[in-house]
Amino acid sequence: MRSARPLPTPETQNFWDGCRAGELRLQRCRACHQVYFPPRPFCPHCTSRDLDAFTASGRATLYSYIINHRPRPDMGTEPHSIAVVTLEEGPRMMTNIIGCPQTPEALQLDMELQVVFEVQNETITLPFFKPLSHEAEV
Amino acid sequence: MKSKSIAVVGAAETTRMGVVPELSNLGLNLDAALNAMADAGLIPKDIDGVATAGEHPWSVAASLGITPKWVDGTNVGGCSYMLHVRHAAAAIAAGYCTTVLITHGESGRSQVAPARYAENPASLFGQFEAPYGLGVPVTQVTLPAMRYLKETGTTEEDLALLAVIQREWALKNPRAQTKVPITVDEVLGSPMICYPFRRLLCCLVTDGGGALILTSAERAKDFPTKPVYIMGTGEGVEHPIVSMMHDFTTSRAFRLSGEAAFGSAGITHTDVDHLMLYDPFAHVPFYALEDLGFCKRGEAKYFYRERRAAIGGALPVNTNGGGLSYQHSGMYGMFALQESVRQMRGAAAAQIEGAKISVCHGIGSMFSAAGTIIFTNEA
Ligand SMILES: [Zn+2]
Image 1 (cartoon, each protein chain N blue to C red):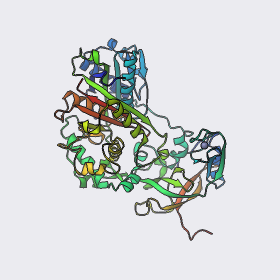
Image 2 (cartoon, rainbow over the protein chains, first blue to last red):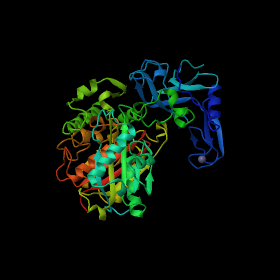
Image 3 (cartoon, rainbow over the protein chains, first blue to last red):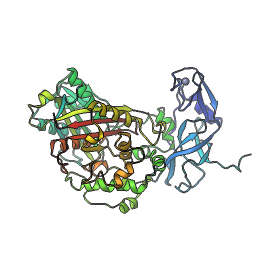
């Protein structure tokens, strides 16, 4: 079990509450309409404090990644991806790509991804991304 | 600060480098400081400004019996020392102090009383990156590389060629940690650390340090060493965590720092004789060559394919062997500065004959910061 767990702050609690509810929540500025991440109570584009949270589509594309062959002790012993994805709404976030081989052949830049949530403990659920499977959708 | 109004009059590395288990992190700072003072013919009471990163300025000052009128504890990662040079030059020009000691020491390999950075699970890194297995720099600063390679057509072979060329330079430096030549095939056959980064595309982990002493160009004439003038300086910052880097193929911090340095030096790229580009991992000098304007976007690969950076090339780069093959204690920026000063003094192990202008550029943390210093040996 991974030991590095987020400690939410008042500014990020809504995001982590969203993950527990199976929603990837982003913030949008009501003044300039820009969407941003990580969450904070001031718009990084125009400094407005008038913000709105909304649920993102969960769709993303693979922006860049590495495959760590020397995992942190709490991350197991097998090589694993560490990836930055571009969300459909624009912002980027760090994640792991799961549900596929952890190889350069399986991990192609710009591949389509879908968010999945995995419970870590009673307070933290982490968002991960897996290759988008069109057939699997109902 | 007026160009060339401030000079480096003392420069030295630690007495020993590589594996130095007899000295702590702080001890390496002090050893380097004493060597730089000896180089400049100064004693602690002559120093009235102190800058350092990793350790606190008060630790270095108190340990050496210095009573500073000015300190700088800026810590923006491995390029902190470039920022210290820039800030010290401004402080001397402003009259806050006359003679500044800048020290680096790091027990990177032996880990004797290292400067520890506690991981905060509520920080941006703690909440939004660490949970995914990030930790040591090779899991962070490498992340933009795949996007850069794809968008610029740069290959793993190009990264390997950079490592080979820097090893060629290292073999001319007796103080380099590495002693044997390598080939592109050997680099690409070395153990995988973080795909696409293999061991020989990653910096060394060693113990060591270095120190610089700066004063006004006017006073510099009275020192035993050949003055090395500060011609231009720049600094820049971008993001707190690498996933917030705006564009993974170009560093805003690099561009800001480079523009400020070249602007204040009043030179163009063709004036430059020698270049130091902090290389914690093999992709970083590719960004630096493009973001500082030495190459057009995506063309740094040709700079290496044509061996322009190599021995006998038009613009020698990382002539000590770099972080990949010389030494890398952790915050390597000081070692890049030391090599620029040696080249400008005409005292480098792999001396570039007739070099008059040296550009020294550092990365801080995960492309979060940058510092650039342009040196010259002509008053
Ligand atoms: Zn806004």
